[in-house]
Length: 264
Image (spheres, one colour):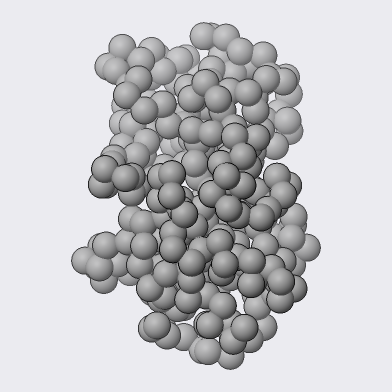
């Protein structure tokens, strides 16, 4: 365990934001000791929320997956980036959407009108479906005035087959070509963290985020005033973390070390 800042700060923590992929599970298997760690933290009265930029699963599928891995959590304890996008779109005047999303996630957007001539383009992870034709079509809509909304802009993620490029590169290409900056909905967006804190009913100084992504999880959380905990599982790579300007408040080998860090 490595400390980088005032240890007393952890004593005032009342809530934990758990990142999912790379922290609690990798692909289809739970990280060793993660189920027990979450159980212990919840049992000791901490307010817990489970936050994810994952854009391949609907909220219902995400909840089912976590339960099947052994985690005890309610669907309304999960705050996903696609859910944040839905909340944002509800605030717009009758938005017409183009959903560049996995089929399962589209279920969460069923209340919105969809068309190829949309005024809001929502982009998430679509696996191998990316093509020059698709990118060019989206680029042309953006040039005609559509708004680009990215579920997240992650660079890469850890899969069971190793590191894989994430959608951030495609978002950057669309931004560069169109000259339009995307609205980033998920972590590290300040709006995403504000939504999570509101949902928990806690102040930023009372909440810690535990994640494997030094940029989106730790950096985004610290920017929003949270205590940032980095774990050495998932996409964590020593060289990448050491080269980052972001300094976590605490570094743990794994989420299973969290109860110990909290003196539980």
